[in-house]
Length: 295
Image 1 (cartoon, rainbow, N blue to C red):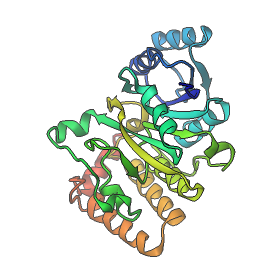
Image 2 (cartoon, rainbow, N blue to C red; image 1 turned 30 degrees about the vertical axis):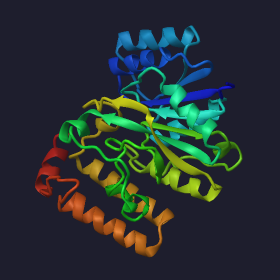
Image 3 (cartoon, one colour; image 1 turned 180 degrees about the vertical axis):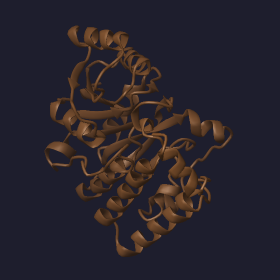
């Protein structure tokens, strides 16, 4: 079989040992032709991390780009511009890849010419701990409704291949045609941890005629490290909250109809402000402000 070439892009920020472990997990893959591009937004690494990154770069096992800013969408775009593979795959900097992971992504594109993007399954350590016995065969129809999909789209517990509305940023791949022919890029107006930037990108794929396909065989383990990456900004800080709502409003205003926006913002308030399921978050604003005073 003539396998497509792969570009694996890893945006990273404030990661140390777990980043090196992620790279070793990736470099252990036996896929015939793939390149590894690391876009490093970390101002200063620990000496051992820096040594390992330099060694991998000097031996040609990775291509390392050091940048003086921190923006996940911009890091993704830089990786796209510097990549050359037929397929572009994004993973986080705190993941573990099983054998055959790259093959699983590539095989989907070979078997499904209508697929422009593959959403892989994410064995999310934190979410699995909360509902370790939950399994879903097929997502409900609401998971394809842009107004409320974000509260029904479970790529952790779902077991069967199927079309989906979006992928998760830690495990997603795309045909290069989306970038070269259709000119798609990640919107750099998404702030902070850039939540929903991948959702915004995936919604634009609908205009190309391609679909997004969920392949549970293309799975990885997401460690969800407590520091670095998106978690470097405390989820209880006021800054994180402002960025979080900004990004959701930007997603809605760019992509949704007035009716879809109404339903999105209603669910956002019900879930993230009032703390109702599936978020189950503490709605106490005083705790948010108190956390901000210590950041």
